[in-house]
Length: 136
Image (cartoon, rainbow, N blue to C red; front, top):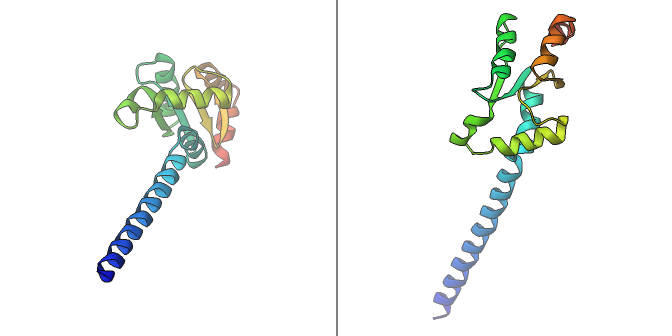
């Protein structure tokens, strides 16, 4: 009977340890996959990032500008994230906090916020974009 009690206590202890480890891992994953962490990681892990919506004509214009410059941006299609984590809206709120705008596209080059489609076009016209691209 004593052996059985010890076995039960050992099993309960093991289950408790597994539950604690599982919760710690879940919190770690949640914090590292938060929309804010995703935005920061995207901006600083890629030379060019465009936060976009697939149907937006201004986003298409921004993508075309980079295509004409033979650059391949990392594009985050906020409207299509419904098929992944359904966090496109949350990412857009993070961008509002970060850049003060809720519109798309929002373009970043080498970690620097360029702005939207018109801002990107202006940066091309005045040579700012080309200088930023040459830095990396």
